[in-house]
Length: 85
Image (cartoon, rainbow, N blue to C red; front, top):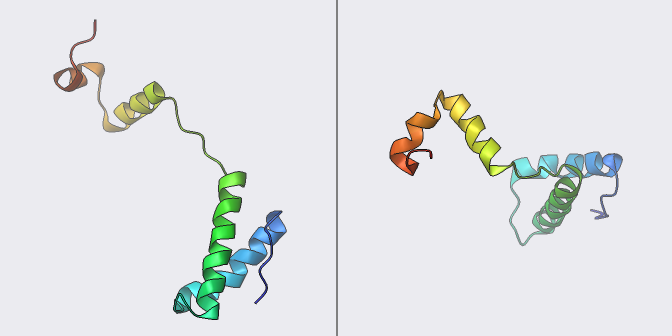
């Protein structure tokens, strides 16, 4: 088992493929397969954080979005947060 950096989409796909069967077999953490899985999963996670970063939403926009999803209006929140000025 060869561990190498993940620098591009091809490396990423190869890393995912290399651990897919190991995930199903759930090797013991202290086995060579388990250590390979742990290290490669850590590399994959680091690559995903860097390449597929999701910025936190603006707090007001997040609240408004959630209110729309739930069908709420500002008056519905008055009991929880107080009346608007």
